[in-house]
Length: 232
Image (cartoon, rainbow, N blue to C red):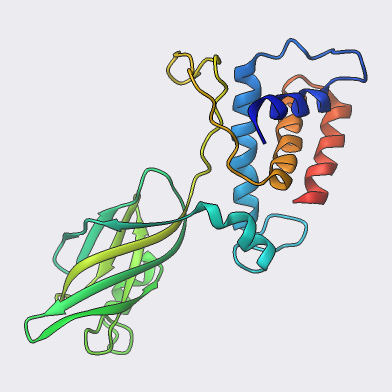
């Protein structure tokens, strides 16, 4: 869906038939509402905050809708004694999995399975022979804290590669000639919505709902809220 059609659809949801009551909305307001709406829609699908109560990868439909947001990065991990630490990417939104390759002096590099665990339980896990990192069994654990990924080694092996798979934030739409509210600069090119048209339609309803709430248009807000709930 291109940006011209996107803006028409959002304004059409707000305007009373042929009245053009809300034609005075500035483009940056529509742009900000749509970007907020697509992030909200994405989070609802990831965390099962929808009518179906289905989260990420629970159905083939959700896999199809969200697959364009799945991203793989090779991260540079720093040795911190009992664990290796790396910073999460700037566009990180939701964790999928970590894959690592490790080696020991006696053994060649091998791939290891990484289990995500709670930071609160890490001391117990590291002291438990059945759960602690093991090069022999090719298993270890990881935690997330302060926008950092920690992969534990217990000083048993050296991590040579760290691969992170995650859901990134949706790319924000940009309207050519519209002001960037964060910098004050004017966009010189369009950035269209990256989602398929069927998903973009739902996000347009969500954006119209946000704008209706901002301008205290109760009727339009309630109508768009029903559309969003029934199609999320």
